[in-house]
Image 1 (cartoon, helix red, strand yellow):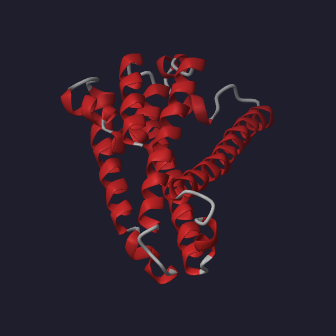
Image 2: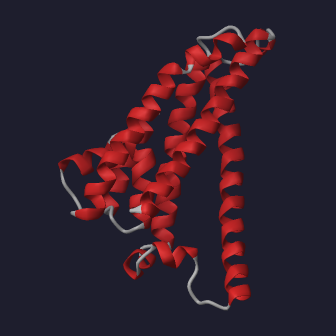
Length: 209
């Protein structure tokens, strides 16, 4: 339970941080009139896509650095203490560790990346409605509501997912684009989501974007 909830909080924090930076960048360029010069030679959609992809690269680098730091920390902790167990094995059962294969990790990263693109695109559109930095927080209120709705749907489905497995609400939460971004990567890593569910969720996320 704690592992899947922790993973969901990490994805939420990454989405919120990346989305707010995308929106703030667009609002700043609008307030400084830089966007007017850009739009003389660049389509508006290209500006949004450029902001989203640039932020996605930054966040992915941060995620890779975080994973590498955790791996090095675990190895150092094992060497210093001499214990065979570490933080990962304490929070995960042997069945969950078996699910940490290359395919599930790749699918989880694809789903998390697609969800990040979805929320960053929504943030860019929300930021485009503001003309000054003072209006940025007001324009992002809709994005905040949507991200919280998606997170709480996933949060509510995480308990039944770990306890009893699959049911209608859990399946909805795993496929619904606002919640799948948070719940599905963690569910894949603990072996609680089927391959076909992940494929459907990725298609739905792509269509939503």
